[in-house]
Image (cartoon, rainbow, N blue to C red):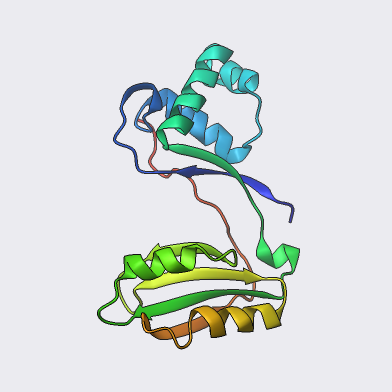
Length: 170
């Protein structure tokens, strides 16, 4: 599976041309979620507005932090030798935020989420080799006073890898 384009939405309190609450912006986002490289002129034609309007809206959403256009690669298709989700229970008196920041600095860590429930953090680690993954665990997880427990969950098969704006326009 080739790399796909993805639109990442960040929480935004911005209103107006940078808001994801705006119907036109939601239409733009929906189209970019299907193809992040879609030309502005094609989006403009489909939404019946000018190309300049689309350009301004996309730039405003990107500048406000509400929109980020990136490529998503499927680690299973690339066949990395080690791709795993790790559930982390943070040790007292450390905080999930502090551990998340520490691990986020590592290039092998591609996803960090503070969660509720069994774990405090859920991270995804992708390494070129199993040896590199083992080294990551030894150097950044085991033996650190800020981590109480970890559970490694290896990926077997990817069924879906996307984030889409779910709220429908009115």
